[in-house]
View 1 (cartoon, helix red, strand yellow):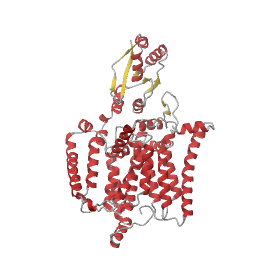
View 2 (view 1 turned 45 degrees about the horizontal axis):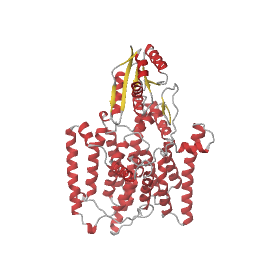
View 3 (view 1 turned 30 degrees about the horizontal axis):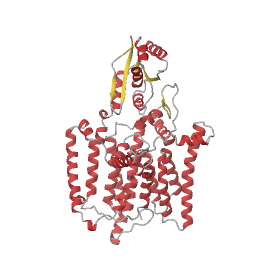
View 4 (view 1 turned 180 degrees about the vertical axis):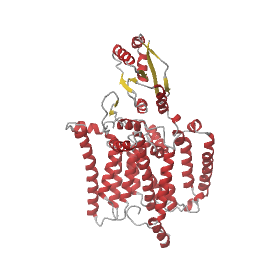
Length: 539
């Protein structure tokens, strides 16, 4: 059994001896270090520039901008406190705890860089732990390596491993829980409870891991009797639930200074639950789920590769893609399906329940988003490993579809997803934010209607700019405020929200145009982004 039991092989004692030496020898250590170094190099050389918008918001808050459920408060004079979003309660807190010491050593470092580094380290650690779990599950050295690479170079995991987000660190903690429960000496129950609690405090969705851990603890062979099993389950539950509850109560009463109101507390914990509930027709719902699952493994578009990658850099990946497709077809054609290498589903309870717990939740909430499925991606790989327990790849890689599939997937993702998004040009908000640096020199005041996600980018990459909420209900006062800011020596810009309001209200536009003139707009406007700014000058 892969979790708690000795590995049982059917091919004789000699192979059992070889596998045991392999698992405890230097080969595994060197392979783990090689995998870690490879992933560190790959992730570090091609970090995404198309940042997840939430990550920019995290970094903005960590560097001192107040934030609440309605967005960021960039008009306050004092530095903002840590924002405790109940969906990922301690992510900003941990991020700031990592950022402040590093800033004292390297004053020029940005919070976004620290959060990306946290993701990279978490991703590499998760892959290394998964490799060891696969060795225990499959007892197949090359199968474990290829499945680890399948995990590490899947599209959504690869992209988010080089970005600021709560998903990769949370998944790494769940993988650590799986590694702790797989110990032959017996699970470290308290440590598992604390790690799972921290995963839930980084992101709430990690609670879906609870049924899988219950099964793993209960079925572990280290317990001598039923009472020991009950004790392990109870201790784990009390530690994890108690830690999470204590953290939420501490934030509610101490950090937020809220009153003892159970209804308000429950509403705060689940404040966006109804917003992400899926209400689509069945077939549309099923299509969303299928597409989200596929996008975990494959991402990007051909237009990205053609638009942002030099053709000379595409020759080698395209050649690999064609070669791998041919190898997969050849392997499947020559496969003896009467004596298939696929094993019966032995020892799949833990990864199967891990996978099912998240997919059941994601079939109702957050259906169309692939990145929430990262929390159960290790379970999918472990389940695949259980099905490939009888497969031997040494000396026959070219006759098995797994290696070719992994190389094909990695090549497609590099060409059509990771490579293009490593360039500034493929990220419209970042491109506009960097263009603004050339215009927003000196003292700059930007008036906005709503401080939306696109504006988060503009503020974060132009931290010296001052942002003020435009009082559009009283246009005369707003005009007077703008004129005063210009007289004080500031450059004044209006964002797309203010421009849209003026365009839709002729009276307001007339009052504004009597004393102020608009310059040339810059930015981008398409189906996904509407980022425009115009400088205001006296008429």
